Length: 314
Ligand code: F6P
Ligand code: MN
Image (cartoon, rainbow, N blue to C red; front, side, top):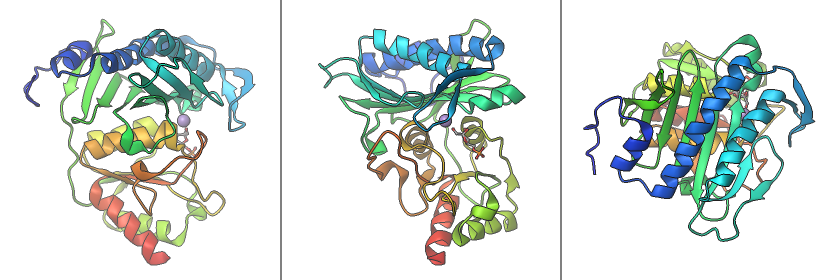
């Protein structure tokens, strides 16, 4: 097996997974998603930006692009032969694929997060959470892998199987090749912060947290896309993203299964932290695939400060 940090840049994703001794079936799941994203990129670049005429589980109208991206990934996962069940943010149920599921992988994903941003030509992403076994309704700490793909000026893929966080970038042959191995966040006061939700709806604890970040010199960086916003915090190695509990939305906005768990897994793997403001995201026991929770995620010190401000405000 390779030693961390010893891999030449530009090795491709499949080879990297093989050479770092990842499980063959897990490699298959990761590579199926990676392959699917080539078609999603094409859909983003050229696809119909209209409505699909349907709505998702949350009553939100679905864009044709959401539905198409979901289909592209779903089809690949179903035919991979290594997936037990699938939950997608765009469908209202867990799809069982194989009853012989113990040794297979359960996958939850958000096929095209932030899809309404395509309209204004901002970056969007795909987020994937992977468990071993038959079920996705489990605490995020049980994930065996998580990944996201960011469709920005460049397309990048970030994954972790619990052994560090690695970034790959798509090259001109549409292959993902290694860009950064073992990304580690630094500590210290946040240099950037990414605050979701209307400030007038913040609790006094969150308001105090935002105030302290600003007093500490943190610069505002919020695009409205969870994947690019998290990616910026991760790749700058320092900063914090939040989508807090709001006066009119005590659970915030983002979904535990499809958004929070995979990002929390990745950021923790990079030496950061992710909290609801009261406790670790990865310890949440989801009751349903629809669960939402507030999130404060990024450098450890900033997440600890958020928890402190919230607990002191009562
Ligand atoms: O999936 C939800 C999402 O689009 C995320 O990508 C993003 O972080 C968040 O919503 C933005 O929400 P708002 O528009 O309320 O800032
Ligand atoms: Mn989403």
